[in-house]
Length: 91
Image (cartoon, rainbow, N blue to C red; front, side, top):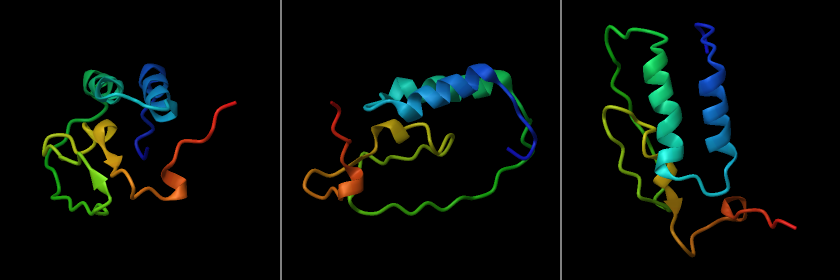
């Protein structure tokens, strides 16, 4: 956050999505929409980005207009999870 952008609404939406056990696409879209509505910057140009994902992941379509828009749909293929990929047991 080099520019010092501050939005309590955006912060709460992104924190909520990041801490949910099973966030939906809509849970990730809400903070993105808020960020667009807040318009913290006007981008004059965009750099070409390269993304590398392990082949264990599926549902990783990456739209060119918003690289993280569908991150809520990403998952690790069944049977290919590592211990860190599994949800913690809740008591």
